[in-house]
Length: 304
Image (cartoon, rainbow, N blue to C red):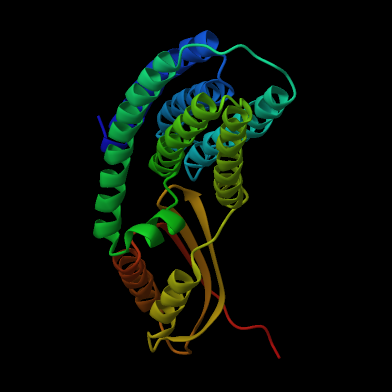
């Protein structure tokens, strides 16, 4: 089993147990913050199920209808996960928090709420530590800093788990503060406000992830620095007079397609053109590990 699948499975098990505990505690205490956290955990659990599905579908071999493979399945399911996070945050957490502000509710057992949040903090923290470690390994392998790697990574599963678990841990703290202030002051508004804050955090994460996966779904190209590196590699060979056109697109996580039209110098024979194509493909793969498909078209420039 891959490290990625293990990370998703750990998060799935953690969120399933947490969702049940939070739901029961929310029903017993009537806490808006606790119920918002329960909705959050249910959304996270469903998202991990999405990612396990995407891992299975995305690994299918290319076929006639999908010649570049099924890698974009990963982006599609990740986008659905972002939508679900938004629904859990905007519709349930924020909506229920506002609803609690305008109605009177009875108080339940604070001990049950605190015990549930303590359990959630440990479980969510364990899942977060695993996601952080895997992300750190990926950043080290690619030579990036942690924050930069998280920003530019095209790997949706671990990236989403990292975001979800970070918000989950912070959300537990916010919920505990809301319940604590409600217990101290006797004002249920603090509990409702905590639910709204949790919802706003979920909305922010959903928007960030949704924009990222939307770009990948519709055909995001290489990062500017990678595109510049590709152009330099193509242009530095003396047999190439000019890079007429260069296009790139991610066809899956860490799977970059490169297509280029090259103006080959006069006098270069067909055998050398074949050798040159092989050399360029090797150099591109060595310089940018994400490069998976290379298409080079020797073509003259358009007449001026």
